[in-house]
Image: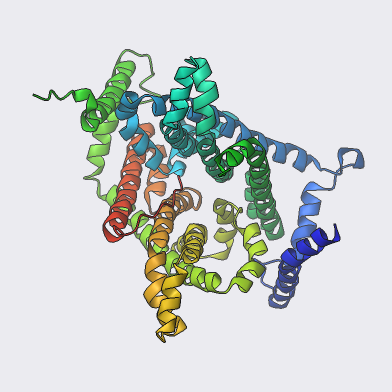
Length: 264
Length: 262
């Protein structure tokens, strides 16, 4: 127990050191664009933690902006995940279909996602529908391509075994193909999750009336630089939390895979 | 004797797929299934994309985006590769800095645009700085990763022949890390393009394909221009990525870098 605590301290000591240095340097330099971290923390507190105690002190801004952003991000990610896995597995199992759409997929994924923003804005007008579509369309490619790869390279012996046991159709898909494509699919989902955060921010910076990106832009327009920094810190923390949560889920879901692959 | 089935040819099927999508969209537009006012006809879009090649304004915007992209990527490599070597060869510094980089990395680079807008008076400097910040990560990480993969036997051999640390770095570590760096740079090139276009869309400048798209908003058929410009952006993405893949294959034929990142 104490060993674990010591190890965490041994690993994380540079963080407080960096914070103190940052505080000292920014206080000394007094550049308006670089507020000291204590001021940033205070700004974050005023922005999001000045609500009543029964709401865990969350302010109105926190309760409207954070769930709005996270909700759109997760909705876009879920949409991209469902579409990417379905299409990817279908393409991975059908070489003929794959040959027909491969150039289209390669082209579509090469379009830098921000270029889609004006398109979806013109198509849907500003709002959650536009944002979810931008996120989903921009991040679906890594999932689709990985699912396709994973479904294509199923171990021959596993497929032969499935045939011996008389598995076909749905059974074969759920018991053989999907599990063996799972590690690849998870790799795609992870890349997409960090891309989703980027697209969430950019879609909120361009066209939105709520969300963390909107609050960031609002702070910048009113020259509240501590607020700008605070929003950036919150976005970074969200990215960190999403990634950590994803890795934890992946470790649980794929634990069978790692043990199956280990030499006995 | 061998009868070739056209369905086995990647080229034939791929071309058929592209032509098929074009026809479906065209027919859907002409029959009114998709409102041509909301989503222009496929033939109109392709025609517009073709006519953009002769549009001096569009060409100068593309050149501007590509210039920013290339310089940003150059700065990225110039910063991230030496930093990767430094951190890779000083494990204690690396482990001390790791918690800090772990907090910095997940910050979406796009979120820094509003801050950068107040920091920089010059858009060009701002674009280069943001690109370098965002694109440096894959190069840095791949460099460090590749450095771990260097054959210790080769290093020891050279050292026992009396070569110094720098000579070993130059003769063994750098060539053996190069394929990993190349993969990192290829990933960074896609990020650099994303950041360049994002800044053009959000930064309110007047140069680049991002700005070109925004300026068409006042036109009669903005959607035509938006889709045509997006098509060209896709072409740029395919070509730049393809060039990197080609270069990697030619230069590092001796090395089968199995670093996969989607």
